[in-house]
Length: 311
Image 1 (cartoon, rainbow, N blue to C red):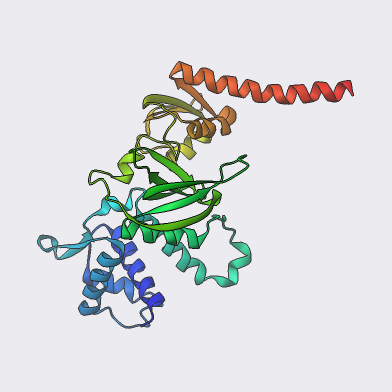
Image 2: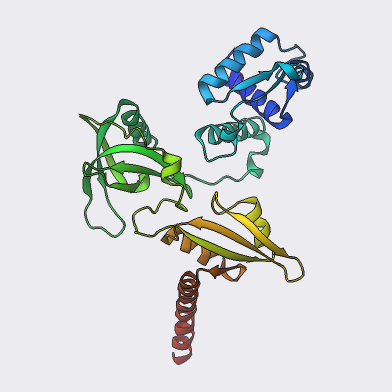
């Protein structure tokens, strides 16, 4: 069987078990035979076990069996499907890719977002990460007249707001983020590096909103009040993994949410972008800063109106 067809079966199997929570092989087979992939043929135990092993090797998703509960199968490490993990991202991306590839007749009715990236540069970084070698990055910051070259250890990559970023570590132990769309070139060196055994990418960014890491801000408790439909958006797509709802007032049409994170510039920009739908309640200094940004923005429009009247 061709690899694309096998991947479709792997994804179908993971999604079926994940949605059912616990399911027997007989129930899996019943659902399997209702799909076009089966062509009316049952899923043999040998094929099932082969798929289960492949899913573990490729995705790092473990399918376990509870023999005490009627030999029901379940996702043994289900937590990876609820996090910003590689497994969850790969599974979601491939699932959507399969759906779209099977619906090419609807291509004019499916609108996607573009993720700018240089695949060759991304491939070079990933290869360097695998081989634990340092890279030379020629990088041009916004508004810079010339590019600079950095020698760094590629620690991890992160996708945020349709952009890929590289987290690099310098010899002095400091970290910096580099956006792939501002890289002019990446070259692998002959110098190897040793990863800090205690480094964990998820933990490293755990206090951050996005990719701003070096502005000196410290984690604080932030309380936001979401008005109208904004509260539903925050429930469906939390701003941060620490987010929790404190209260909901249906009569006054708002809900309050708490987050524990660093109030970096990208987080402040997100708050500002929500306009009057989102209000900062705590801390007061952050509320004052966001209010000032709104006043400055309004002032820009007011100045333009005055100039137009004078003209």
